[in-house]
Amino acid sequence: MKWIATLAALALALPAFGGMYKWVDADGTVHYSDEPAPPNVKQQKALSAPPKPARTPVPAAEGKAAAAPASAPKTAAEQEMEFRKRRVEAAEADAKRQQDAKAAVEKQRNCEQAKNRVVMLQTGGRITKSGPNGDQIYLGDKEIASELVDARKDADSWCK
Image 1 (tube, one colour):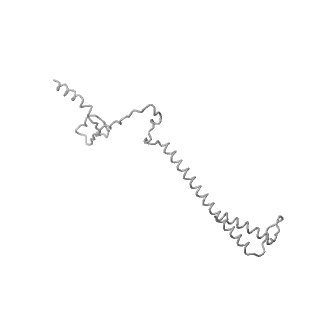
Image 2 (tube, helix red, strand yellow):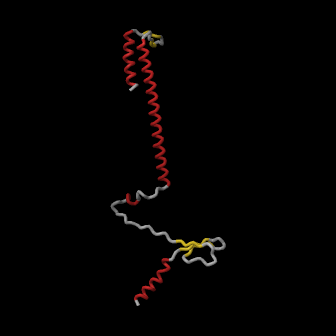
């Protein structure tokens, strides 16, 4: 007698385990049903219900940090913000590279000018300098020696 009651319970539960069917009738209308399509239907597809995701309880102590897991897919707005952040960082890095390159070129130019000035002062000859009124002033030996010391200091500082 117990086995009859068990068999009856199983028979009643069978429709709950049934699948879903998708079929298109002669008019082109798509039908979804838990019963198979009529025999005159050409296209019939059996669908199964997707399994429900398992839910894990969230401890109350973790608060909002647990509510948004790190592996959750990012929204379009979050992806856009990350893209903009990467673009700004790339622009800043590019600007820094350009600034460094410009500084290196300027340093090289200043080094060459300082070296040329040292060579000019060492070769001797008459050296002139612009005066306060724009007229030329000829330097004496002591002034040339003083200018040579300054020129060597400049060359050392620029050509490191």
